[in-house]
Image (cartoon, rainbow, N blue to C red):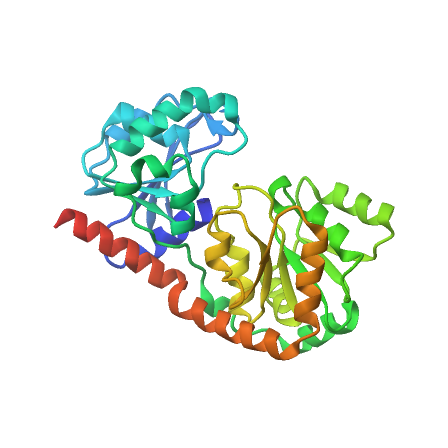
Length: 348
């Protein structure tokens, strides 16, 4: 969410005055300039279930003189801050995901969030699939207007050919890739289990709290999987260009969209993902940009990957269509303009 907000600020400042209001991860409040954007970081007293406890946030929210206030959710601090501070300006809610794991907190927070959402001028979810399957968004569907997320496509178009060749020599050609945070909802356990039946080497790049357990499982199963760890931007692009298939085995609605899917597609790679009733199925069109299978099904994952590995023509056709679709519909500059046009409509 933080990275996406930074991109929107950077791109939309060419059309308007833009500033950001965040929390500071310390007790001090500070105002700074970041790449020409005014950022106010409000002091916080700690965190409760990941959300900042920031008593002064409503005060700074009330001081905003913006024509449009964009609040990214789920974000209890900002939502409560808006309800308490009631800043002037039209309210736009950028809805990234439902709250999935904190069921106990939702008994209280859920009512506050719904009160907040009902006061929004417009809500921007990232896919129609999420609107249809979200118990929250279904209650405010009349306020929703879908605008997907985006990536800087130009950063993924070209890769260092020497590096791509070296990766294929290191891992094997073809090989299957995942890259991202190793978190519970990524479903990497099932990718490890699927690897025993995939007819190519498997690479799990990235890091996170689940990485060590994934490595242990691979060792217990006797599966030879490469774990290269965190990748730089250049390494990431090279890995995506070098692989034959990108795998995205997520298992929970916390995976609301899947930007890594778009990144792989921008490199011309087909994707094997899962059917979660979220934006994952919008990002990866089954049978067109790749294949989608049921979650938590290692056999289905392996079968889909092997299907693509055995059919080079289909891989190249899907990869080419995916690359063109991402370039046309999911470039971050295009998304920023679509959002900004909605702001202007509200003001008009």
